[in-house]
Each structure stands twice: as structure tokens, then as C-alpha cells.
Figure (cartoon, rainbow, N blue to C red):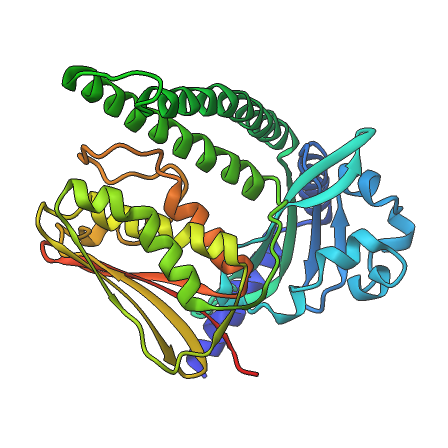
Length: 378
């Protein structure tokens, strides 16, 4: 009871020292501040009534103050597509979720297609004399990221153009190498053979890099072409193993393959899954020591097909395990060549098929990369 009286006394003191003029001045100050924010802002109370919208929010939504202020946002959403898209996940959020960032939203604004990043910010206060926070509403903030998107599109187009242009001369170099290696054209001495092998390695490396860059532009533009169908999992694995035999032989690495006899088919995009598996085996060879063994296998687990590639190399340090699927990430200090795109592309390709890819690694003893896809049974 004493606490209740103390709280009441504090609140009465607040009311006593306040006056209407001061409150109106502060209200005007806040409204001016909100209207001068260049990004759209919408404020809601705890019952999801619209308390305020700044001028930019009114402009991009095509709404007016008379049609929105004081109304439930779900009622406004019935006749407004933009508001409806903004509140799709609002009714499932709780005050514990914190700031929630969403995928960019495309809105026609400033006479062009613009991109905005939505952020839902729960507002909590501690009332005077009380100890616990009280949820009083949400603020929806739309940050205009159009300039960054335009730069990203320009970068993607540039990379795609350069990669396409590079593939043609690289292919010509490889054809010329094949002609030079043909004994019917003429014999070459040992020193010339070494030069040809060096050129071939560099050409293959460039071709792999341009291929990864082209795949990355496909991923970034959202135009991943996936054709999931019933496929022979063994055929995918055999293709990937054969593609890496030469690299394994150069380092005297044994590729040990484990194939069960009663394996069902797999629902997958054959080409993209083979690309991913080829990339994982290539990485395992690259990071393995000479004369080591890389273990490759398929098995059926709980109605899924699992491809696994295990090496006995150095492994991945714990602080980097969560980052290796990020674009352009390379473990600091590594001396191995690469773009840092292979694992990122692999993740995108597998997840686009409804699958999963993950890694287990013990630093100092090696790593296991696993691809999980749905199985197919006639």
C-alpha cells in the first residue's frame, strides 16, 4: 500500500508540474521531427491503431491523415496493398522479438521502382514509480535503400558482362592447348610440356572463377533456374568424382567412395547438385595434405538422401564456421587460391531445391560437408 501511495504521489507531482501549453509544444516538436525524417515512418499504439504517419509515408502509400489516423491498421490494410504487405508479420511478433528486419520491399516511389528495408521497432516504457517495462506500441520504419540496390545491380551486371567476355578467350586458349598437345601437330620437348601444363592449369582456374562469378550473378539477380526431378544419386556422385580425379592424382590423394546397394533416387537439379558436389570434393582435395584420403559417400537417412565429403586436413577454426557460407569470405591467412564464392553459391543452389548443406569440423583434424536432399521412391 505504501508503494502504491508513493507511485500515486509521483504521478500527481508530474501532472502538477505539467501544463497544456508545454504538452502541446512537445507534441508539435515530435510531429515536426517525424515529418522531417526522409524515410517513411508509421506509429501504432498497443492495440495497433495508427497514431501517426509522416509525410513520406502518406506519399508512398497514397493515403491521407483523415483515412488513417486513429484507425486500426488492419482495417486500413483491407484497401491498401502497401499497408497490407507491411503488417503481414506484425500480428505474430511479440515485444521480446526486438528489432525485426525484413527482406527489401519493392515500392513505386519517386517515379521509379524503389527498394525499402522494413524495420518493426517495439516501443516499451517504464511508467513512473513502476519497475517493469510496459509495451505501448510499434513503430514501422522503412529505410530507402534504392541507391545501394542500384549500385548492387550495376556491380552484378558488370561482373556478368566481364565473365561472359572472358569465357570466350579462355575457351580458345584451351582449344589451342589441346591442338599443341596433339602429337600429330608436332612434338614438344619436356620443357614445353611443362609450360603447356602450367598454361592449362591457369586456364582451368580462370574458367572456374568465371563460372563461379556467372553463378553468383544468377544468385544475386534472383534468377536461379532450378529443375528438380527424380535423378540417380550415384550418377551425380560419379560425375563429381571423375571431375576431380586429375586434381587428386596430382597430390597423390585417394578418393574413397562409399555407395550402398539399395539407394533410392534423389529429387534434385542434376547439374547444379553435381556442380556443388564437385566443388566440395575440389575443396577437400585442395585443403588436404599430400598422400591423404578424401571420403565421399551417399546414404539414406529418414527419407532423405545425404551426400557427404570428408577430408583430414586442417579443418576450420570455430570462429569461422558460421561465416564460411558467406559471399566472398575466405579464412584469414589461407594461402589457397579462390574467390570465396564456391560455398556461398553451393548453399544457394541446394536451398533453392529445398535441401540443406552444413559442415562439421574439428580444427586440426578435418571437415565434413553434408548435402541433404529429398529422396524419390517409385
